[in-house]
Length: 176
Image (cartoon, rainbow, N blue to C red; front, top):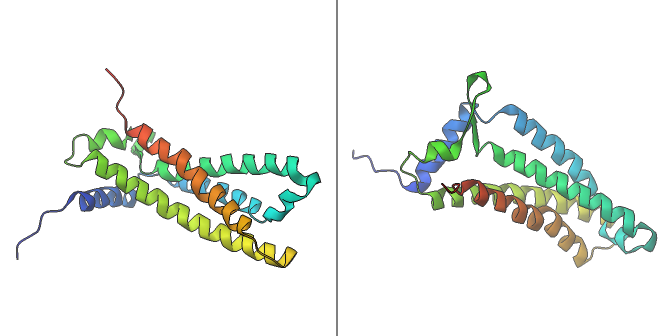
């Protein structure tokens, strides 16, 4: 039986799977990611209708801003395992340096990383929607479009813009 050559996508998936399987991604970044996400998910228990009350507007906006930044940091830690390889004796190397010498297209690599980021953000968004809609139904006995919009912006759009930029920026080579 003739063996079919791997396409770019399969090469990238195989490469990252071996990196993660070897444990080179580091357990510490995963632990930090999920701890930060647990903290961040607590802010999603606040119904968006609370923002419309005059006395809550200022403090809640500050809390949401801080939690959004923590969430973005957590997602950046999650994506760290696709950017750095850790060897024994805590020696690290950028994945981009290793990929430079492999027959993998950089655009396809970026597309793969964006796919991983979007899949992770979808999971967070679904969990956030369940939290927000559940608490809103219990507290206010109603759901508005603002509840869905609030979660989409907070857990999908803002992290995608900030962390997506990091994916592209890390892949750019410095000028010589």
